[in-house]
Image (tube, rainbow, N blue to C red):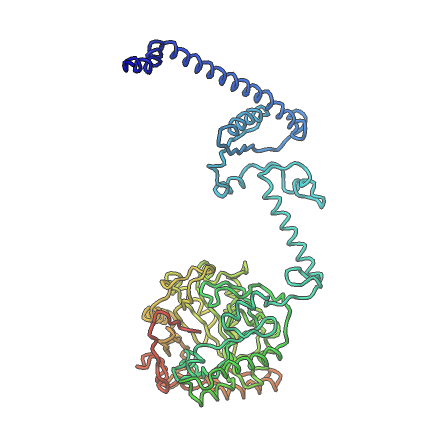
Length: 570
């Protein structure tokens, strides 16, 4: 067989295609042209159908509620058409619909949802023209405006009005003696402040919970003094025996949400007492029992001094500063009387939001008011109060402090970059309440929390606190620096009336106080007494400038290996 013949047979179809390539090209061109024509016809027909249907839809809208201008006046400030589109169909429909709305002589805007952020337009939505009056739109009990056609722009105003009426109704019900669902259960009984979830959270934090709204916790300074490692600043300033001090509260609720709250806002908040209430006798009894049980856990622990362990089993002092707002408790005066009957001193801290309760408060060993800032703006930023009139309440609380005869204290917590530059304003507040003492303490950082923006950068160095105190004292001539507790980053400013014969008398004669409060009770409150009646001389080691820097030389200071984890405590 001839090989050349086989090769020719193989390539002959290709040669034929090459010779007839013109006709092939022409066929392809005709096919593509026909396909393009078909697509144009389809799109044209679709557009015609859309143009015919949309005006009809617009006509249907006008006959089904959106009446024409000739038939009825309408109060529409404008129409916004929002669309979201991937292929362009929705955009095209929005454009056609806008033309139909324009035919009604209404301003219209077409908005792509992809480029629209509602938060950026809230203000302009609120300021759109609103021709009808609020009385016309919202007046009357039947709320006819809610049943008629309303503009989307006006829904916010309608909802505000509904919420306002709801609040007024609730207030009226409360005035009439009816309960609010917020504070009562389905049977009309007040709810317990401590919910199961709250109980679990606080128990994990080391609280011993009492009844439905109280708690007790062992302070780290109590543990420290049991081991002979020193007491808290109240030991240095006022002679408190830290290992015999019980830290408790009859109210876990508070009216503030302070940025430096130790408990990271696990406690409830409120502006009034609306929970079930336990009796003060039960609260005090269980508080002492729980405190003693926590002390018992240190029996036999290496380093715990036997004599202090025995002393610690008898409560001598009560710091009502654990958490929350103890003055909110409706039976706080009865609770205080019970403390004094048990020969327990009372140190009560209030957040300066309840001036009436301060005025009505029975005598306490020492009454504190937290002064966390000296201006309205900084107080709002730091304390984050719930009361709308928080600033007036704050000022009224300081004024109420000025008429108290027993020992009074301003408690200043310095937060770096937030309130350390308000010296003149602080000085004015001092003149308002005339406290016996002013405690100035650097803020304690208690760890990261989603409820607070506080960081270690806000904690001032001890030298910075000392500098602040020096500058403040220069503005309040009736006061001097008396004591220092370096370990707690805290200093005490005292009124000069407690400096007698060149010596400071900032400490407390606790036995004398118990005698005085008993005489006060026996006389039905007629035999009063003042702060100077139960003062005691301050030891040298506690004074500002002493080499001990406020550490009791009877104890041995324990240095933590990791100082960054140390916190200054209460």
